[in-house]
Length: 149
Image 1: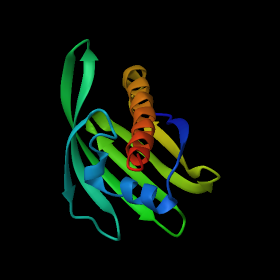
Image 2: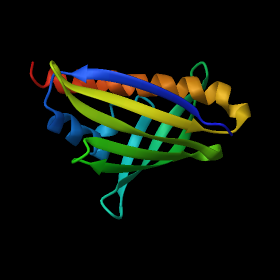
Image 3: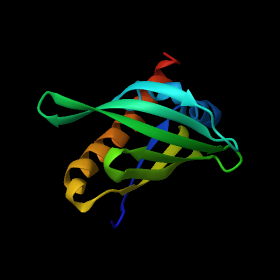
Image 4: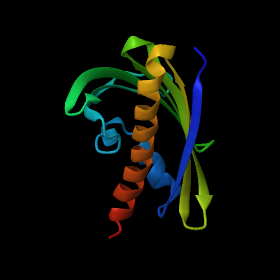
């Protein structure tokens, strides 16, 4: 199972601290990640924020299958970075990080992702994961910038 790596970025007209808070708060992922329908925070150790999430994955047209995820966020404010690890059914794993840096127009967020899954699932899972991550960044920008408006 060779991992698939991809990276996306967005610049948000807001202070880095505001963006950081949004990305380390599990319940705030509802509305950011378009497949999620529920989030429940769980106990975490060593500064980790852990949550269980329910998602509805489109399979065929309007048919959507429910799926349960376990997500661990590891915020590191000093490094301006939030690492994450997601475990989904069928051995699907996502690992990566949000790296935040100052930009002239606010905060630049770079999300790097490594997807691991069985080869027979990759053709279905990879496009879904990429679209979901692109939507997450677009929704993050929209949500935070709308606060000013």
